[in-house]
Image (tube, rainbow, N blue to C red; front, side, top):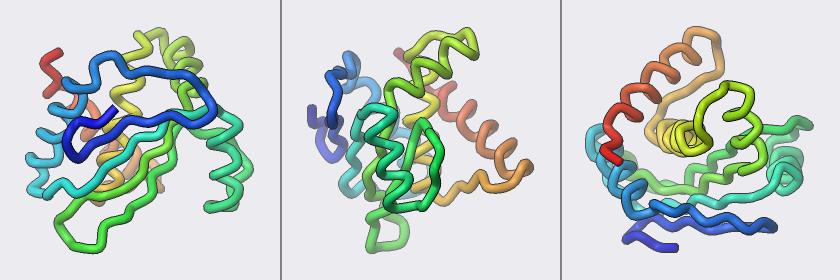
Length: 143
């Protein structure tokens, strides 16, 4: 599925983002609010196994994760990248957190976008700041 410069694809699973046009509009708003230009942004929905292999190969991390973000931007102020999302991990997180799957999925999607916008979550303090920024972005959804 393609919505202008944002595409949603799958690898090794069947998954369809039902409201991709609304999600794309929301993501574009977040990017605009951060004073960035949108280049090409691809979300790839996949399984835990698929993302685990990427985590091992590219990051040398032997752990499961819900998201891995690759920044492909050549120009400062432009957001461009590939964001891999484990649908399995998002589903499990949603159950564990007792929240709707779509809410957790949107948090994970915007988390990847925020990484491309320069936000980091490598320390406890930065994790708190990232969560605050995620919540701020999630509040902009009107769907």
